[in-house]
Amino acid sequence: MTTLELIASALGVLSVWLTVRQNPLCWPIGLVMVSLYAWFFFEARLYSQVLLNGVFAATQLYGWWQWTRGSDEDGGRPVVGATAKEVGAGLAVAVLGSLGLGLLMTHTEAAYPWPDAALTAFSLLAQLWMALKRWQCWVLWILVDTLYVAFFMFQDYWLTAGLYGLFTLLAVMGLREWRRARVAVQ
Image 1 (tube, rainbow, N blue to C red):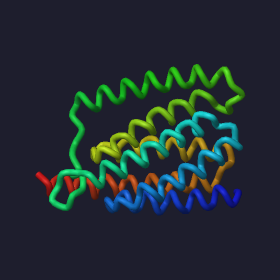
Image 2 (spheres, one colour):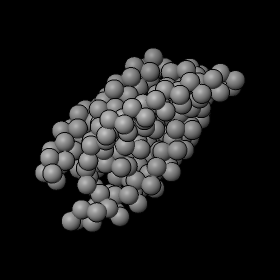
Image 3 (tube, helix red, strand yellow):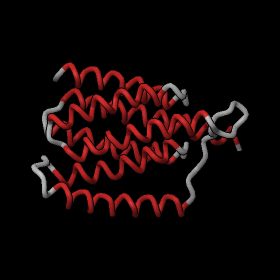
Image 4 (cartoon, rainbow, N blue to C red):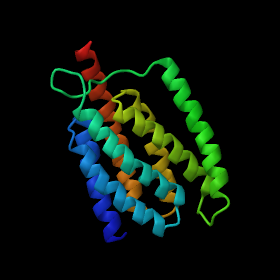
């Protein structure tokens, strides 16, 4: 465990908790967290994770903009459900992204290129759905975060594995809260 991992983990917990609560401060705090994790994963040679956190940095800015320029009565974006077409297209793109990124990473000295690429691609989809306030993001986060726990435990990154275990629990809370918020809007 490094100081960098400890700080990034603490900010990650705060960011996800604020996301569950639909507090727009989740985005700038998340931006700092993903920047620190990009550095951490670079040192660990998990290059798909570095790329993921780089894209997460951009989606933090996009999500912050989306959440503060929305259309509900409070000025924020309301929670809605993704259509079946959105879900199908998103999952198809994530599968293709997993394959493409995995193939690309096999040509580097990346540690575990295939699982790293798959988790990266599906995390990007969950992040996009979160920025758009699709309640289904939490279902995908529950699955992805659970897989991340095993992935990081396998590599002896215990604090980060614990963080993703906590993310899984927060995702369950997020699913409950956002589905409730969606029903209240309708």
